[in-house]
Amino acid sequence: MSPALASLTLAQMKAGLESGDFTARQLVEASLEAIARLDPLLHAFLYIDAERALNQAAAADRQPKATGRPLHGIPIAVKDVLTVEGMPCTAGSKILQGFYPPYTATAVKRLQEAGAIVIGKTNTDEFAMGSSTENSAYGRTHNPWDTHRVPGGSSGGSAAAVAARMVSAALGTDTGGSVRQPASFCGVTGLKPTYGRVSRYGLIAFGSSLDTVGVFAQTAEDAALIFSIMAGHDPLDATSSKQPLPDLHLPNDPSLRGLRIGVPREYFVEGMQPEIQLRTQEAIEQMRQLGAEVVEISLPHTAYALPVYYLIAPAEASANLARYDGIRYGPRSRADSIWEVFFQTRGELFGEEVIRRIMLGTYALSAGYYEAFYGQAQKARTLITRDFEAAFQTVDVIAAPTTPTTAFLAGAHADDPLSMYLEDIFTLPASLAGIPGICFPVGFDSQGLPIGLQLLGPRFREDRILSVAHVYQQITDWHLRLPALVKGDAAQ
Image (tube, rainbow, N blue to C red):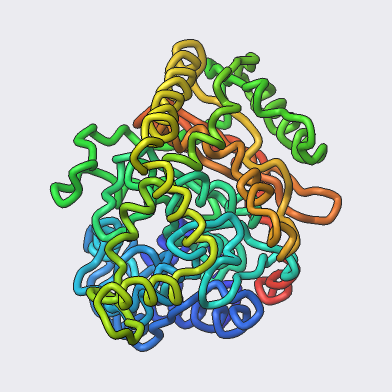
């Protein structure tokens, strides 16, 4: 099977299947071959179900092509915090080892109903808590552009799988930047929808007011297709919005005439890698040349995003993770009393970062400190949200760097949690405000590492940021560049 088949975009796979150029089984076989060849180097996957995927591909090939299923026969991957019936779901944690959920997450189920074949589950920081996919209890994921570096996190497995062309698309989650940041580090396109736009049913909760199911793909066009299928109201999720989906017809004309792009001065900070600022400014200038008007704006409460997030998210995590007690899920530590079961199971099977955040969150919610910490953080969150609302009164989208650095070496922040948290400094504000964002490649640094720009839009206007990203990708090819690790295979 030609390795190049696995390197096709989702749109190309869809067209090839419809025209009969290849079969669903051939696509799945190409994906499995790419995984067998590259995943020993990358560790992007925690679980592969080859037999199931091949059986589903064979069934797809027996069905008529005109079934109205837009993802008919296309293999995808799913971050291991989303449940898929019949597949284990560990959330990257030992405390869920051996857990097989009896149901499938709504977002995944909608993709399956559209014909997608879930080929496996991807690695993640434990309970999605991290920015590097080094916190997984099952080993870290490596960046396809440089295996000594991290792929970002917490959705690093999904980002690496798409970057290495093991699959054309993969689901991730974004609580504080966990789709956009790894998309930047791995040189792929990553979409974080508006909070509430995609159902959280079947998603293992981290921060319930922040968690958002997103998608990785090679192109904005591919991301738009996946998003359009999995988005929409779900009665199984009380936070799911009934807001109707906008028209996601992407423009063929490479023009941005009439678009106003805001560039926030607060996102160009001292200490940011100079090449990121340069590539970001170059991409914005290209958008200006396509007809957009570019104006400087201010988001004055941006500096509060980091402390606000690391009070709210751990507080919600401490409540959500209280259910993992050694009784209902996964393994259980031996002890003489029920309380010792709780203490030992959680102490032995939770990782260091998860324990740190549970303790932070429990402290922020404790009597005597709730209003001083959690209460004040919620007020500051409102100010951050109002900053964006005010900005979108004058501009259509906001363009900014996604990360302050390119992919860093594994272990670089191992002894300094704060320096790790600072890697999300540009992605946290949009997560707190619940607005949509998309990251896509706009160049490379001097070491050949990808650089991504993020576009932010008003709530429920994913169509706007997807359209702008699509127009940019029509005149550039950064998103089609391949890591050296897979370049030779794709050329065969």
